[in-house]
Amino acid sequence: MKSLRILAVMAHPDDAEVWAGGTIRKALRNGGEGHVAVLTYGPDETRGKEAQEGAKRLGCGIDLFGYRDKNLRDTGEAADALVELMAGLSPRVIIVHNPDDTHPDHEASFLIARRALIHWYDSPRRPEVIPSIFACNSYRGLGLRGPLELDTFVDITSVWEDKIQALLAHRSQQPQRWIQRLELFCRAMGARTGIEMAEGFRRLVMFNETGAVRHLDPELW
Image 1 (spheres, rainbow, N blue to C red):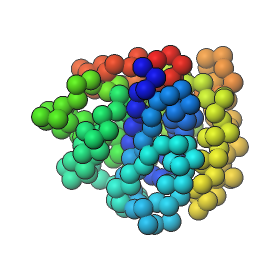
Image 2 (cartoon, rainbow, N blue to C red):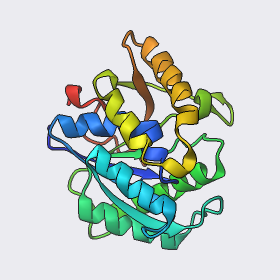
Image 3 (tube, rainbow, N blue to C red):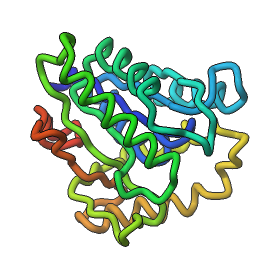
């Protein structure tokens, strides 16, 4: 089980590091594989280059789709491009933005991932093992209808510094301004389950497909 591959489908270049960087890094430390799909920016843009450096620091692969920041839309074109990546990687775990996220790009990213999944499941390339889907946290743990429902917490205490180093790759976003707030947030997540620092998620059952992995923490695979 420790060879499982995680794919994070995120809207922006630093989203994977912010919401799931510790989880991805911990999976890699435990023998897994990681890959990030960033739907906005291209590899030659400043933020695209930062995204590649952030992924390198986490130790995972990355694809940048080049759509416009603050103008991401749920389209068949975007979904089909994502299907190609999913089918090529065959991830056993997919991390997406929360369906209730207040950021419109995050919402669009989830919708694109949802559309891609149903296209993938309904194609001749349907995966032999359906991946498990986990939705990540959001700003201050709040969604459009109030506090987000989270049911999965990954202990990232041992990889916190790795997460920070990956975040620091995004220099154009001045990460020093909000790393302290993120630390407080992760400590609050950890306090909910009696650990020092955690990232929070919600397990999604998509199209009645439960997936093979019951928990996102690689220590529990």
